[in-house]
Image (cartoon, rainbow, N blue to C red; front, side, top):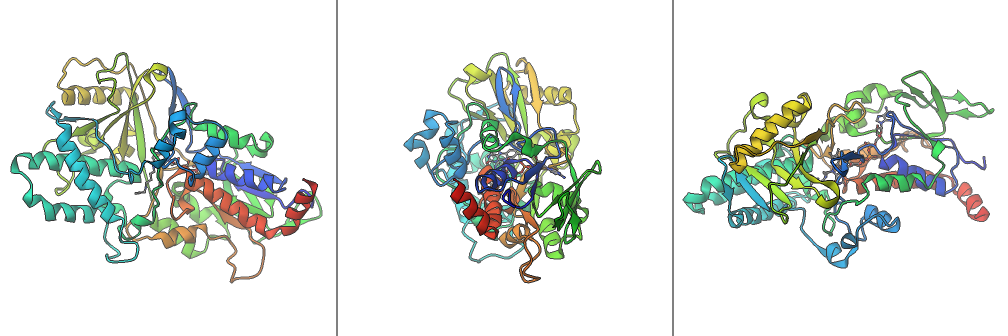
Length: 498
Ligand code: 6YU
């Protein structure tokens, strides 16, 4: 067929769209993307808020430098600011460690940034060390959390007694921040051995002046818009079958939507989030997924990281302040955390990012919160959260009459039925091998020389860049290439006609 084989892509997130983009460009014209929700973009989602746009999902390009394909594409599409494009920005190597700006403590005192910087420096060196076990040297049950605690235990006896408690509280705040970055409840859930397999690219993280979704729109514009079918939640993927097409051809795959509608295909690329797979994997395919794949889905981690955005009439922070950190006196990474969610959920927030630029957006603070406390927050009303956040800020800044925010917006990624959380991590009990197992196409090569029927893309299938938009993008391109390689003839027909 000069139109090429029939390919269905499940999910219109960046991985699905990237796969479609590459396939279409290579002459695959029998392409459809089935998307469960009423919009494309998935976990890339920009929304109007305050006086401008904010990000509900992905916020930054992590490591914007030439080796990052999201940076490359965005540069090509002219979506980034001059600062983001500057050589200087591209060369910054922060190794993913955070910077402090203003630090408040739960007793309403501001903490000197000097102590803050000293703690960040120690933490960063332990953090670097935690990424050095990819070739062995630790036990399979070791976590990043247990390793960091061990490093702290070995060094704190030399610390100045007067600042000991404060430093522990600061370290505990950094643990909470790492939970947000890894999208996990506790760093005790994150496996130590594979931690360094995640690659940190150079470049100072940057945002999209016209929203992260501007990238999605540009990718979508590279193929016909009617290729994306919205509101088509896929229920079952029947494979290893033979289904009649409207032509005389027989197809091995049939995709069945929740409303009973069916689509036949030669190949299907599944890009649904790992969170959705954890909920639905046992019924999503018929015949079911092989057990090694179900095992990988179970083993890998998929946690929750949410945002709470607060808009203020006037800023209570200085113009040069880009982040506000909160520390709780008496907390320490060496003692058990609190477990009363109703009472203590808000203490899981490590702090706020000041969203930029205030001239266009207004005065907006963005808090991050990860784990069980984040999932609990999703069950509260916005009014309830707003009043809790107001009390929190009054307490920490020591300003009992601080005006409350004028509006609030919070995300609920765990409750999104087609996402079921935020992003993946390599959990204790799993390894990078599970990521590769998840990415493995079906049927398995050793089974037979049959053509591939079911392929897997998505953020969670990239061994070095999981949990990011560039990992998702690369996974979509990877699976597109896998199919392209199976149709050399189609490629040559296309090249000649070009
Ligand atoms: C990044 C960032 N970022 C914050 C928050 C979130 C994420 N990420 P999609 O889900 O997009 O698409 C799948 C589609 O499938 C979707 O549309 C579904 O509706 C659909 N679907 C599901 N079921 C279906 C069915 N049955 N039928 C049909 N369709 C179905 N990434 O680069 N920078 O700042 C952040 C952040 C709150 C939620 C992020 C960030 C993650 C990205 O958003 C995400 O990876 C991709 O968008 C996923 O694309 P996709 O196509 O795979 O899925 C050292 C070290 C440690 C390691 N970790 C450090 C990494 C740091 C990660 N940082 C994240 C931080 C933030 C703030």
